[in-house]
Length: 402
Ligand SMILES: [Zn+2]
Image 1 (cartoon, helix red, strand yellow):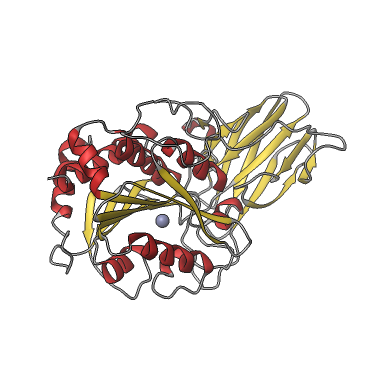
Image 2: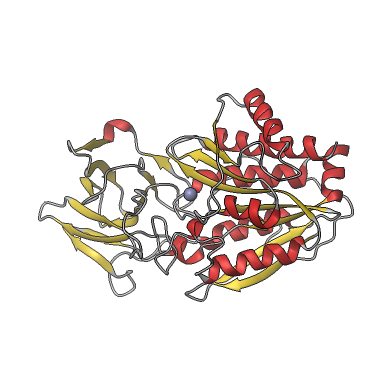
């Protein structure tokens, strides 16, 4: 691991392990559990030597049934929502435990919604495989997806993306920033009492704000976030040193821990889309985060607020190029850099509506900074998501170290 200049350890280092390129990105705590008998996790359905449970962080909202011949049907339900019309992000994550090797099917029943996420499977919650296309069939309305599986004895996790709990991205960020003169702060508490954790480092007269995971299933955005943060703090040249000397870096890796750990599709535990709550601040998570950002930015000029998400394509939402912000010129520089350095050119969408309650709109209103919502295609490869993260960090360093 490359050391930053004058690095001092101010935050707890969990482990001496380095962040290795290509190391597994997802390491949630999923201990192998005894599957049957008194120590087994409570099953939501069982039969024919199979048992299904949701006894881990970020597991979905499911009920299920096992047929007499061992076919499993899992209903994919969403969290309670205050407003009608939930974004169609049908997240699923559950564990099937088999007494013995079993060839069977698992059908995901989306009820009123349609299939979106290609399933992933894992035996241990660390190494994940995408289900091959020929192992998945959809009904005509795409409201049911049937997975053909050769289950091994013991546990198999099945989920819409590799599972990454709330603690996972906080831990990842803590390790990535360890020894780089960052401070860790608890800036608030979620509705259900989970700590809201932020990190700040670097210094000078300007600041940048970085967020991800406001929306629980959006882990390809988190992949880009990780590459972005790594690049921002490890790039090792004069421009990068100058950038870090001049900019306070304000990072919120997990603004919606209740939604993530409850396996929600979109909302926090109050049934609210947090990225429609900025400016209104009806929820403790957005209220605490915005207060913390303002306090950490102080009188520094915020040059940009980057918020990493996922959707059905890779697209960047930004304010119009004539917006009243002294750093609006970063947007064309970023576009030029991404167009030049990526194997694909992301779409751009320019708009500003301060009433929609997005972090992006709030950034322009409250910080006079371009709020940039970076959306990664939810089926993008981790490698391509990371390229966008690296290219975005490089564009920032190049533009603002001039
Ligand atoms: Zn989102």
